[in-house]
Amino acid sequence: MRIATTTGFATLLAGCLAIAPVAAQDMLRHLDLTSPQMTMAELSRADVEALIATAKPGQPVDLAGRRLNGLDLSGLDLTGANFRTALLNRVNLSGARLDGAVLDQAWMLKAELSGASLKKASLFGTQMQDGRLVGADLSGARIAGDFSRADLGKANLAGADFSADMRNQSMGLMRGVLNSANLAGADLAGANLSRAQLRYANLRGANLAGASLVGMEAAGADLTGANVAGADFKGADVDSARLIGLVGVAAAKNLDAAKNLGLSIRQ
Image (cartoon, rainbow, N blue to C red; front, side):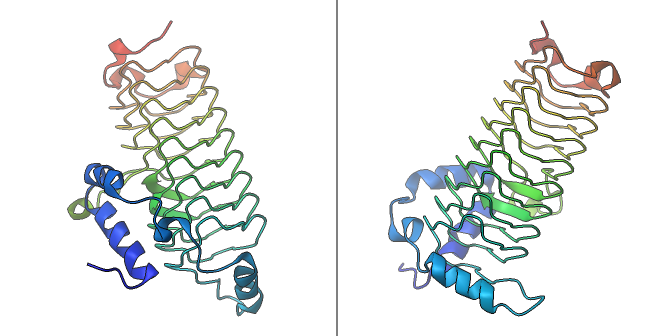
C-alpha cells in the first residue's frame, strides 16, 4: 500500500506504536529508517521562521504531521507548537523554547535538544531513542514515550510524569521508557516514575527526592550517590541495580518493599 501523505505516514506509524510497545520495537527493525519520509524535510528553517512570524496571537504554530527531519531549528521560540505525529529525526532543537509544545507520537530519533526548554510539554508516544537532551528543562512535562539510550545528563525533570497510562490498556501500556538512558546528575525531584522502565539506566548522582518509583522497572540501573530522600520504592524492581552511597536513604519510603532488593548491589 502506498502512503500518499506525510501526515498519513506518520499517523500510521504512531498508531502501530500505540498498539503494543514490544511489537513497536520489533516493527522498528523492519522500518526503512533511510527512507525519504524518515530522513528528509518538506520545509526549511526559513519556512518555519515565517510560520512563527505570521502566527496569530494565542495560536501557536501548527506543524502536526510535517516532515522536518534534519532541520536546524536551534534557538527558535516554538512555545506551544503542535508537532503531533511530526517527523523530526535528527532535528536540531538545541536551545529552542518548546514550553507547552505538543510532541505526541512524533518521531525524534537522534534528535538534538540540549539546553532546550520543554516545560510542561506533552511527549506521549514520542520516539526519542538516542536523543540528546543534556541540560534540557522538561520540568512538569508528560513523558510517556521511548527515550531509550537518550542522554538526559543534568536535565531538569522535576515534577515530570513518566507514569503508565492506566486508562489506555486497550492500546497497550504507554509509559516512560528510559532503558539504558543517561540521567546522571538529572533533577527528578517529585517526578512520577510509577511503572516506568529504566533498565540499565545511569542515575548516578541524580536527585530522586520525593519521586514516586512505585513499580518502576530498574533492573541493572546505577543509582550510585543518588538522592532518594522521600522517594517511594514500593514494588520497584531493583534486580542487580547499584544502590551504593544513596543520599537520604533513611528517609526513603518502602525500600524494604522493593522487588528483588536482595539481588541489588548495596556495597
